[in-house]
Length: 151
Image 1 (cartoon, rainbow, N blue to C red):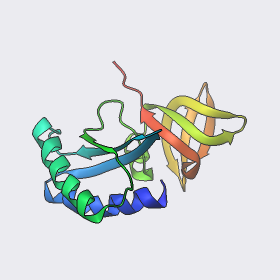
Image 2: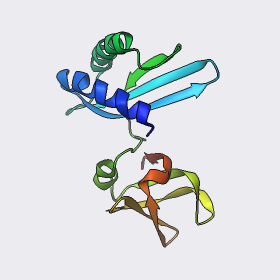
Image 3: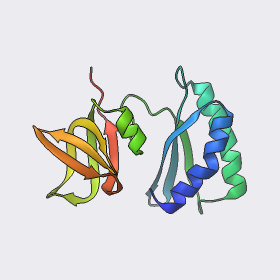
Image 4: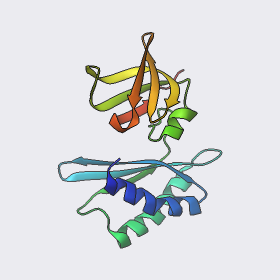
């Protein structure tokens, strides 16, 4: 996570918590002139549309006053869903036993994309079993990771 995004997360976390939700994670996506700040929230019992609207309204006000992002962007607030992204070691530990997809920033042992069984964490690494081979992937190399829903 970039330093800028970490600062924004630290700014928004108390606001989200004041609305009885927790901040699951954030993404800042830039595509030309169109940028998006996506904020994922969690709540015991599930996140409703009203929860998303309330959080969006409150954090929008904070972002307008603090103005941590230059230029125009779209704010999107949602639940992480069944194919939830994973950001922290705690989240990887919580979802051990699930199939996950991982994309790395740079190749590790000749590859950037992995899909396999998450076996937990060890230090600052995640343990991933892909085709009976175990990989120890450093969390700081992960560009994107998400749970693969099993039906």
